[in-house]
Length: 172
Image 1: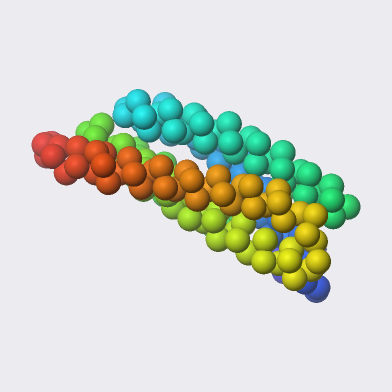
Image 2: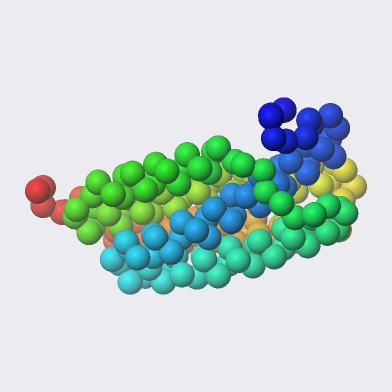
């Protein structure tokens, strides 16, 4: 595998690594969301980010329960994918002066994060089923359901008003 992580030899090792990956990602997201809250100008978007921050904290607690269920200590494995998504979000948001365009960019960045999380939790659920870890599935499914709901809310905000506001913005 890598210099700082245990080699993956079994399906259980792969499941654990994926769990560590998403645990790291969720913790990084809790650091990124306050910045997104501060930058958002649409009150509904700001409120949505605040809600998702609280949800993410609950998702971390659920992941800690899953680690406990499988007899492992909760710890993250560096996730270059989420680091790249967050870095790109920060770079794009840092370059936008128009507030309407900024909100559209924040929504797009948040959806990139959501889509990443959806793939990870979907995979973890499938693998938990395969490994006979039905005890973990409800916790992982609760988080996956929240991720889908957040993505749906972001899509609704973007398509109902924020993208139109951004498109109507005057060029600088």
